[in-house]
Length: 259
Ligand code: 5IU
Image 1 (cartoon, rainbow, N blue to C red):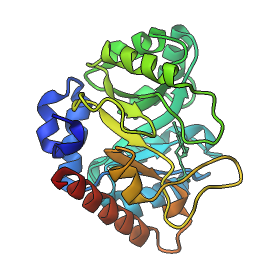
Image 2: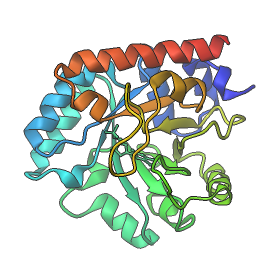
Image 3: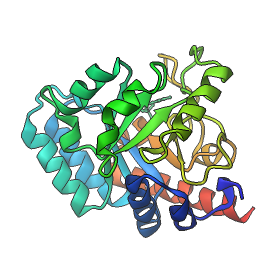
């Protein structure tokens, strides 16, 4: 059966990655398939945003290296908020170096990503090395592997996408899902499709980003979880905007299952 037709809870038995199981539970408990892209520049902004939007999201996605006043208290507090509001932290680091360097970037440096992020993103370009580098943590870590990207004129080909998906299949204990733009891997209900580039009333920005609507991303593009950034962070009432995206995305998924 196609993953597009299954309710989130019915997909739990197909997952091999423990974090994916937790994520599917959170999604159904909160009735939210919304991931917030929290691209703000200070610790205070990030924590305030997480508090406001926390009730409506299943994942909060960070780019921790854009925070101008980073210290370890920030990730400690962020973790507390994520536990209180029941969402997972995804560091969108898009690891893409040799395995050894990825291992160091994931565990060391100022950010110590492995100490707070249950989810990370990785590029497939370097081969299985980057996945092997973080594999020993698979009880406590889920990887979203990138096989497509939302920007205009990007260099990813369909053969790259296909090969990246095949690579993911070899690491099903570690892979939570795939970051992509179209309905791929329909026969793998254990993998979750995470799709960025979602915004109401906009087709893109001036730097190549391309947007679809919440309905389009779930019904046409096959997303299981949609990533919304500026659609929420630039709204006057961010909680209200998050609730609106949450409702639209959830209704679209229910419609997809019933169609
Ligand atoms: N992001 C994309 N497109 C992609 C991938 C990641 O936009 O293909 I892979 C990230 C970048 C940003 C967020 O953190 O998702 C989208 O933010 P906006 O909704 O503000 O464009």
